Amino acid sequence: MKPVRAIILGYGIRGRAYSAYAKTHPDEFEIAGLADPVAEFPANAKCPTWKSWEAALDAGVDADAVVISLPDRLHHKSCLKALEKGYHVLLEKPIGCTWQECVDIAEAQKRTKRLVLTGYVLRYAPFYKKLREVIASGAIGELTSVHHLAAISYGKAAHAYCRGNWSVEAKGTGMLVNKCTHDFDLIEWWTKGKRCKKISSFGSLMHWRPENKPAGAAERCQDCPEQVRENCPFDAYKIYYDRTDLRYHFADESDEAILNMIEKSPYGRCVYACGNDSVDHQTVLMEYDGGLTIILEMESYSQQRTRITHFYGTRGEVIADEHKIEILPFLGDSTTIIPQQHGHHGGGDREIMTEFVKLVRTASPERYSAVLDAALESHRIAFLAEESRKTARTICD
Ligand SMILES: NC(=O)c1ccc[n+]([C@@H]2O[C@H](COP(=O)([O-])OP(=O)(O)OC[C@H]3O[C@@H](n4cnc5c(N)ncnc54)[C@H](O)[C@@H]3O)[C@@H](O)[C@H]2O)c1
Image (cartoon, rainbow, N blue to C red; front, side):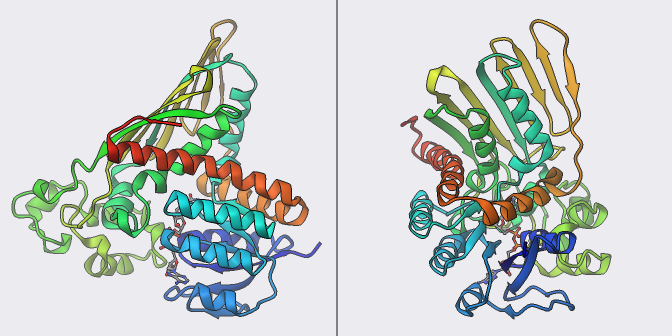
């Protein structure tokens, strides 16, 4: 079988992550072109390149699919055009910046009968597959409630939701839709067959606000007095230079490039002077058919970047923390499972590509529609939660 040929629209972090699959699985996936206005493409790239996604889609390239790893606000237009051109799509989340944009894409998908697979990499990660298996097995009976924490970590949250791409809601989606559609998708999976009927949400931007700027702090970290910087956990030098775990956000991770980035890019701004309005923490309360209740908590100010989920059922509990799954039945012995994980997103980045190739090659138009419909549910809930937060009302479906 020939490899699936895809054009990559947006060659940033996610575009590069998906492109890597062509190197490791050349018999399955081939890059048919790369589009990005500023990214440096690999020197040995043999495919055509363009400066914009529009030019790439107008070029009439022989390809089966496109990967849309563009900024959120470009997902809607680019996905509609890709579908009309007859391409299958791997679309990064969020599907759209509003519920209406998601509906438009769903209608276009049904009309064109192409695949739109959302970048819900966690669904494909071995850890979460195992967790789903445990919950679906009935090992703890019927679920009565779930407490789910999405802990982002102060460094990653400062990077993405204060200084970076998702700091201003009007430029894309708010933090909940951007970050927690993953979590709502996992919840949709765990509660399969049940529908969320009531949603309430609370949250705000509590800390990264101008009035919390320490006395004497400057607008940028390089200009900040040493004694102020020393006492600031969000200092860009601490986050990007002293530590190295967030450097993968930048194409050049060398010390020199990172220092240059801190001095010149938005990522060197004081966290209290970023003009940001995205929330820094949010809670969502949900009630499902049959009485199941779920609490989701999204938190910026955590040490760890992780997800911790506590499931309560009529015959036991499960506690999962992205490393181990503890099963605590009321009858019989407790067990702990530690699933094997390797690769980014616990292997999800690789596994979603395997699934994408398989679906493009073998699935039916009915299956294509089912795949997108399942992904839409997480967006429906996320947008309703935002409506609840902004209107201070419980939303009943
Ligand atoms: N599935 C996940 O776990 C996950 C994780 C992070 C980000 N994302 C999503 O992936 C998308 C991309 O995020 P990212 O972190 O890779 O961002 P990024 O900024 O690193 O990459 C986006 C790229 O798009 C390019 N671009 C901008 N305008 C363009 C245009 N008109 N034509 C072509 N290219 C253009 C930019 O130059 C940039 O290189 C976002 O929608 C984000 O929400 C998903």
